[in-house]
Amino acid sequence: MALPFTEDTIKWSDDTFSIRDVADSNLPTVVKVADGFYSENEAESFSNGDLIKLDFKKNYSKVRAQCVGRTPREDSSGYMSPDKDILIPLGYKGKLKVECMKKTFNTIEELIAHFPHYVTTGRPLTGKRGVYSSEQFRIEKGVRLELDRVIPKAGLVCKIDGKEVLLPLGQLARFDVEADDKEYTIREVIDSFKLPQYVRFLDSDFEKIVTSDLTEAIDNISHFEGYLRLVGLVQQEVVVGHHKPSGIAAITSEKANQRAIAILPLDSEAVQNIEVYLPVYEEESDYEFFLARNFSKNMNLDVVDGGLYLEFSKCPRIHLLNTEDDDDTPPPRPPPPPGYSKLEADTMVTNRSWRI
Image (cartoon, rainbow, N blue to C red):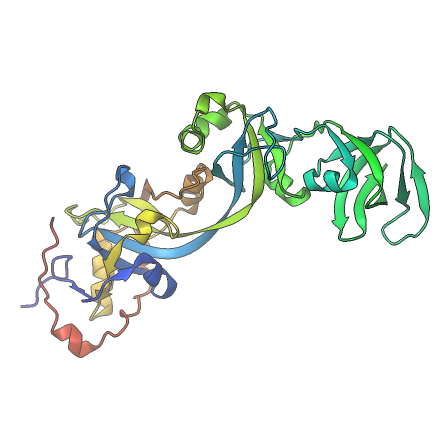
């Protein structure tokens, strides 16, 4: 009589693979942790024998930001000496204001380097009536300019009452920063402004949300005044699936079951250190039976997005989010591991114990 197809009798590959290797070529699939990884953060620890069902990869955009003080500190890279980085989800809905710590600029080149939104001319200068116009005109002191874009080797394009003018490089000038009272989301700043930009979040909840991440980023959190230097966009690639710790009983009920949704950033040190075995399934029914006994089979993407929405750390973290999922059709049977053959599978040990 054949043994029932359970986690104790399933056949696993002899070779181990990284999560990255599996994610690049074998999704969806279930893997078994071969070499556990233990962290001070329990949520980032995996034990030998844990099962992870890897469903799909997903990319998230985040904004790299540096925590800075309100008082300018001159350094080689500019007027502000930045502290360490944090990452802010591009979809974060909190409102912010764009700030410019430097209040006066004496050249157009200096104005381009810091690129505030609005300035007022502090002395007369020469402009051209449009980007492609050769007609010059005098811009008087006290004129409000909205900075728009830079044309290399030509100058700075600004708007005066909605009309474009070009400020040629190399002339004497003075500009005073004018406060921008408009409230933005971080996505609006990224879409509308040249980086870097200095911003201050208005929500009182912002620091509460990112307290642990700010503590990591700033040596002395008590001196953080809420100002951030937005540097640029980064992409974070994650693998999304489910996690079943070793030793947890298989599911016997046909009703909804609860399992932790696993979000595994591929650039996380914890994920990079995990080695896993790939399964060898002889029959389609074996695969479906194994999934039905061990995992939820659908995915609430709102829960996934919500977990990463509040992730501000510069060091990506593993997330295990408890959720209840209804049974659904299992994903297609994954391909066999690299180099697998039926003959090799028949010689594999079929009754492995993976209790720690």
